[in-house]
Amino acid sequence: MEADRLHLPTKFLKEIPADFIQFEFDDLRAYAAEYHPDEHRMVLNRSLSFNAAGRTLKPLAKMTHKELEVLYHELFHAYMDTLAFSDTRMAGTGQGSNGLMAFARSQQVCRYAAVTIVPIAQRPHEVELRYLTESESWEALNETWAVFIGRAIWSQLEVQQKGRGALWKHPRLMEQWARRLEAAFLNGEFRGYYVPQDSAERRITHKRFLAKQSQLTWHEAEVLLIQVFGFTRESIEFIKQSVGLSKTMDPPPVC
Image 1 (cartoon, one colour):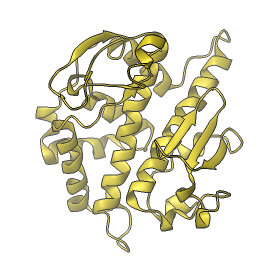
Image 2 (cartoon, rainbow, N blue to C red; image 1 turned 135 degrees about the vertical axis):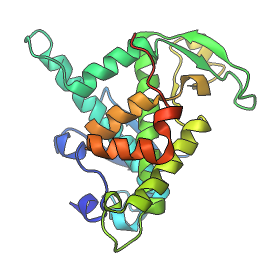
Image 3 (tube, rainbow, N blue to C red; image 1 turned 180 degrees about the horizontal axis):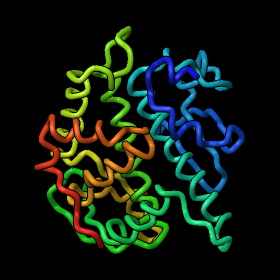
């Protein structure tokens, strides 16, 4: 797998059935990519296709760091769609949910049912409390988590040195990567959005972006790094201790 050669995370990619996603390319103007879970369909900008021809994905090694961030963001949506689809099929069979899916459902109720939003993007310090519907809260969670996944990939590529092997084998580089994540936490960059269900509100804005107060928690990040990227507990502890995350990013209380 090409992602393995680039030392990119592949754990969650291997859990997505090869025929589950329908890939398409289009001349997207508003966004770099879109994912439609109802149709299991991913639409990527033609710039991510080989020779911009809109037929096949161009080699990962030819993509910019930003393009790989976007791709991983969308692939994570596909992964969550895979888990949700599987979870629905197992309903009533007596089998438990996938570990990440069970955690996601608990966080959906605990953290994303009521969120703070930024009504006007140009005024980030003016926030409002919103109580979200089930579909809105699920989208807010998914987008927040996907933002983290994409940024983690981008940060890895920014500090990873070619020819030196996986980032995780070099403590100094891993510490640099962790510091980038810590800065993103402190700047409130790990937050997503949702599309309002109310048609009247959609006439005002197509998206409602979450405020810093409703960004991803470190506890959520830990779970994602372990269950999606395949981090070990030892790696997590190294990250926390090397940049002081254990002191600044305490897990929230259990709901």
